[in-house]
Image (cartoon, rainbow, N blue to C red):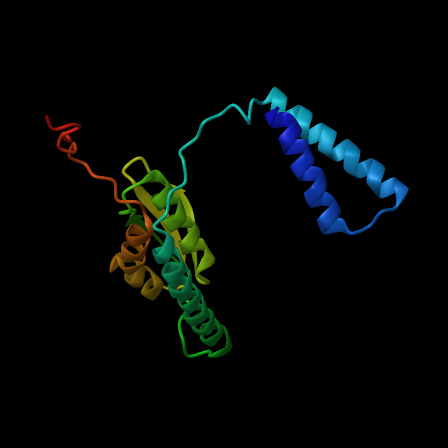
Amino acid sequence: MLTIRLMVTMAILWLLLSGLFKTQLLVLGVVSVLLVGWLATKMRVLRHRGQPVYFRFLHIFEYWAWLGWQILLSNIDVTKRILTPDMPIKPTLRRVTATPDTELGRVIYANSITLTPGTTAINFTPEDEILVHALHEDSLHELETGEMAAHIRDVEPHFPTEPLPPQNEGKN
């Protein structure tokens, strides 16, 4: 049943995105949908139960706005460094602590580092650090202040760590 739902969803999405109804393209679309459905079944992709994605809904929009602003500022900085011969370009490779609380938060942190011009997350280390390449070490100082990680922690779900007290189910 999941495979059929996947294939129907892919077919509808393909039709909406392509907008072309020529015979050759429709045949290729059907073949593509069938192939992906078959591969998904063989790989057991639809049976895998991964980590559910929970975000604090209002905070995600605030984070996206903040990240968009940081991307704009970094674009300006990189453009200045390229166009102004006096500004140094000092490529640096350094480990930055990945402080978000969840695995998903650390992945979002690494992706956000890569989205910001002038910095690229290379990989995770076993010590929960991210190896980051930067165009200039000033970018790494900004990461080390922890502002980006704090914004990501605001987006992450905050589940209670202590057990909840028992509830009185019925009073006699």
